Amino acid sequence: MGIDRDPVGEDRAAFERLTTAYETLNPKGPKTSLFVAYVRTGQIYSQTCAEERCTMEEMAAPEQACLIDHMNECSYVALRFRDEEFCLLRSPQD
Image 1 (cartoon, rainbow, N blue to C red):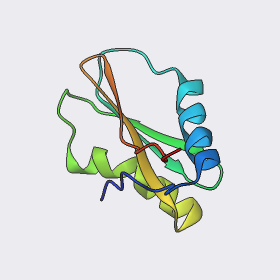
Image 2 (image 1 turned 90 degrees about the vertical axis):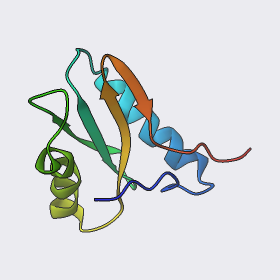
Image 3 (image 1 turned 180 degrees about the vertical axis):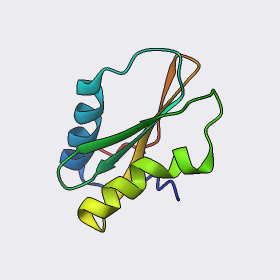
Image 4 (image 1 turned 90 degrees about the horizontal axis):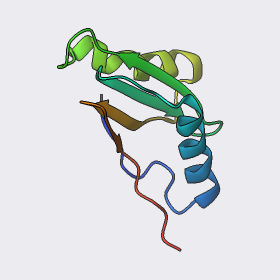
């Protein structure tokens, strides 16, 4: 499992595609959740953890599901923890 903060490089369209796909989910609630996207399409894979702290298996689950479907170009895009959202992407420079 690895978090690549720059999976889209300078591709603003890819950055917008990933952030829009995440925002469409509109996740709510206090549970810890992880979100992975297939970079080419913005398809989101998610995992909500049973406890506040995720197990390694729970943390790896969305990335593994994405890799099973696509074999490549899967990136963590967001994390929800204690009702707060954290973006894991770096915005392309304008």
